[in-house]
Length: 340
Image 1 (cartoon, helix red, strand yellow):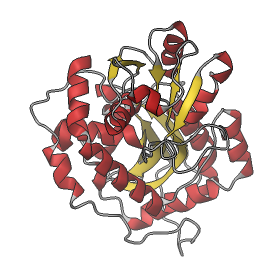
Image 2 (cartoon, helix red, strand yellow):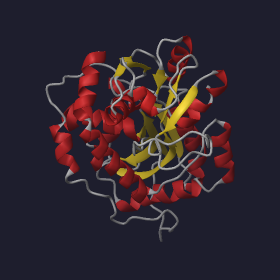
Image 3 (cartoon, helix red, strand yellow):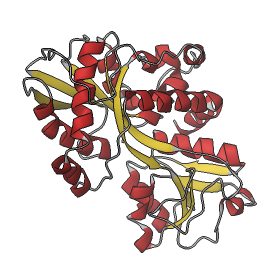
C-alpha cells in the first residue's frame, strides 16, 4: 500500500479545512438505492470506464479491484469495458485526486482504502490533500477487517496492558499509510509508550522485520497477520467490538479495558457532482456483484474475505472514521514529521 506519510508535503496548512468539513458532512441520500431496485430505464454509460486506485499492482487493493473490474461489466448497462488504472504517488493521494477532478459522467470510478484517504485529508487538510472526501459520491465498501496488535516470537508481551506498562518505548515496525496511522492512534488511546521503526515497503517486509527482531510489535489487518502466526507472530489484541472467528482465543481491546475499534475497508466512489441516477446504476450493479457466487469465490481464491456495505452504511463508516482522524490529527502530523 502506498501511504499516508509517504513523500513530502508542506505542513504549513494544518487540517483546519478538514475539521470544518466534519461539521457539514453531507450523507449522499438523494435518489439513494438500497442496491436492488431497478431503474425504469437504464442510464447510458461510456463504453470504457476507468477504475482508478492509488496503489501499485499486486497489492491487496489492486488485486481485489481487478477482480471487481473483471466481473462487474455484466451487471452494468451495455456491459462496458472496465480498465483498472494504478495512479500512484503523492503518498497515496494522486489517484484520489484524479477521481476528484474527473468529470461526473460515469467514465471514472475511484477506489481506495478508506483510512488511507481520510488519513491523508486529516494530515494535510483539504487543500493539501487535493480532495474533499465528503464530496465524493459513495457506491459501496468491502473488505471490512479489524486491525490487530501482534508481537514478535521472542518478546514477553501477552496483552495490551503489558505494552502499556513497558519501561521503555515499544518499537513498532511500520509501513506508511493506515498501518502507521493506526499504530499512532492505538498507542495514544491506550497510553502505550511507542517508537516507530519506519521505512518498510509493504506489510510483508514489516512482518519480516518483526520476525528478525527489528521491532517488538506491529499493527496490521487480521487476515494478513494470520498468515504469519505459524511463523511465530503472536497476536495479543483485536481492535473490534467482538472476538474474531479467526482468533477466538484472542481478546478484543475492549475486553482488555480499551474500547477501541479500528478497521480497514476498501471504498468505491464516484466524482463529486455525479447524478443519483448514474450512481444508482453502479450501486445496483455492485450489490448484485456481491451476491454472485462465482465472483465471491474469485475474491476468496485471491486470498480475501468479501464483505459488503451499501452506500448508506459506507457513508456512516466514512463519517465515523473522519471523526477519529480529526481527534488524533495532531499526533499524526507529529509522527509524520519524525519519520520524514
